[in-house]
Length: 195
Image 1: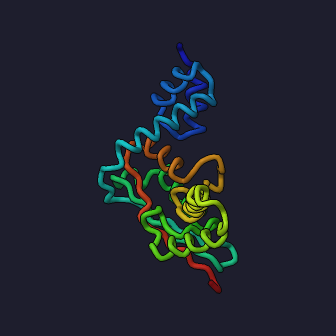
Image 2 (image 1 turned 45 degrees about the vertical axis):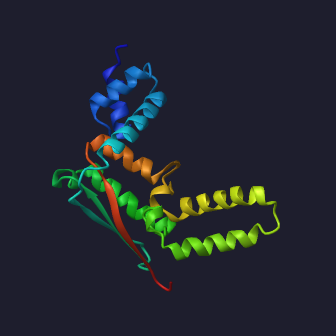
Image 3 (image 1 turned 180 degrees about the horizontal axis):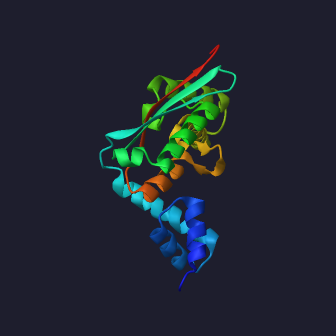
């Protein structure tokens, strides 16, 4: 199917993905914009998985200070080249991540970075909440509560504050696909007065 160039341009503006990938996605989706976005998201996940082993020695440290001066955030995001680090789309991602950390106060970047003591404390709290339930469902309830804890506490698993249908990891995967480089959130710091 031949796709109208205006449609390709619209999809590119909406997603930030390259023209050729947008054209391919629209062809695969039969010209349907919403289906093409889903195709691009799937491409992004595949691309991110392939690039995840590549080194990230460049990047950008973004900052956010709330207007009242009582909350500040620094986020270090790494990529493969200085060229991408200076790219507007990459820097926009870094700003979004700063805003995400300010708004949602994650504990760590990913599950593996959460201290074991915090996880044990959460398990104890959940076990006390479900005391007296039949043993066959206790494990499932505990699993569900821990999953929710990770979704709230891990930056990469949180719902994006600007689009709650997507996680931060999905947003990063989209940029990996669009920019063609591995992107990794290294660390963040969130400082709030009085806490």
